[in-house]
Length: 254
Length: 326
Image (tube, rainbow over all chains, first blue to last red; front, side, top):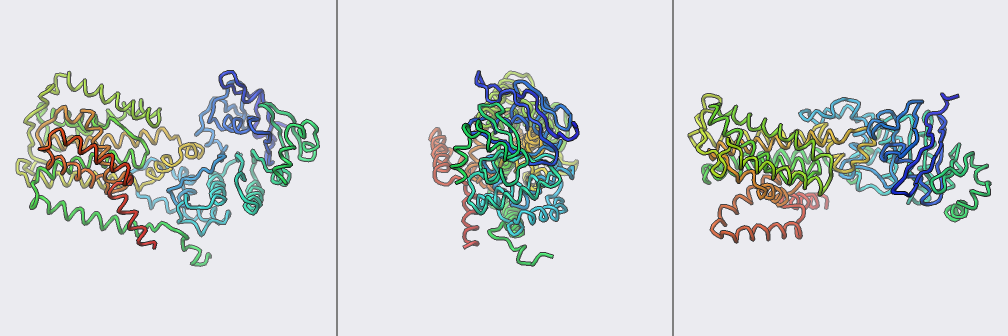
């Protein structure tokens, strides 16, 4: 059933001057699932993300989104197709307000983004939708705050709200809980579970508590190549994975 | 549905207060400019107004687009030549000569922008500088620019057919009207849907791309708008001084506009105006210092960058905000 596969890579490879960061990776992301990409540091997780979202060109291999070859498209076009990513370090627009951050994502749909002669207040029609999205991530009361002044955890949730505003078919989250305290991690974990309804999520994540709790499928990368793939129960008992990764994961978890 | 206190911002930005402040400051500025020629030598104020518009156009690109061009003199100077040539050789009326000047800079802006926008930071600055140097040598060699002499005794003519620009006071208010129109257009650009995207790109370009914005197109649009408005300033200046010369395309002019913008406050609405007036005033009154003037200017630049990086208006606004908040 190819219809079930939203994103597929065939032999995806990235070489940096003789160093192979991503080595013939074949991924199949099933529609409507939460899929995690894990692996030790330097395994090529973020590079894979950059390849999928076209922030880096692939050396070889093919990327298919809904059966359509997107290997040669640029980053903005891939975003327009509905693949929206977040970044490992928080990616907000710090000197814009929280409301404006979300509105930037909604704004393109108005088709006035090049209208330099129009008043900013023409964007106010988007405020209700933006506030509703902020409500969903519990940031509504910060609507007029500069995004740069938010606490770290809230910046990450703002990012999720901005990503949601694009109504992405496929969300790519790069370590959504990194650098967070315990409470924030649970908050974001539940938020991801909530927003994943009706869409597909691919995430890079180090926190095994998050991965085991919400992910349907887990792909383990090691030195740029796929080590194994499966549900958490199978992956976590795989001796190869334990050797390569779980030692550090146990430490991170405990 | 939401309780009113939920709308109450936490550590908020007060849009209404900001708009009020901008309106008031704008009114004060207009009153000063309308009264200025009765107190100060009008040609001096006109010169400062032209540079103020130039700096505002530059600030649109640097302060709101995050792009540091080190070749903006080419737009000021090229528009000056085009306007002077249009008025003197083609005999166009002043309003059309000014439009011709702006149009020339806009076209130049498209060409330079297409080449420069592909690079960022220091590389962007270097490409604009290199292209500006090429424009400088073109202006030095091309027959229509008059080489070292420039285009002299440019006729001012009658603006829109009935405003006689040989009368200094009439000329002054026409220049003020052009400055005001340019200033308000820049204000609108900053506060438009386009301006929002531009600010987002300045803040975090990868994120803007990941939201589906083809950021190079927005940067190019900002570059072209900035070039055209810098051209408006250059064309007006050529009519005021009845002269288009190499001074305005020289690289030191590109440096001067950076200085004006930084001194006044990059990324603020009124900063470039204040910066331009401060620099032009210093030039006028410290001119007798000769080459020491350049050293004074350099010292001011260093002090500005080291001690008050936000510039005069930037520091003032930060202080006001703190006072209001605390």
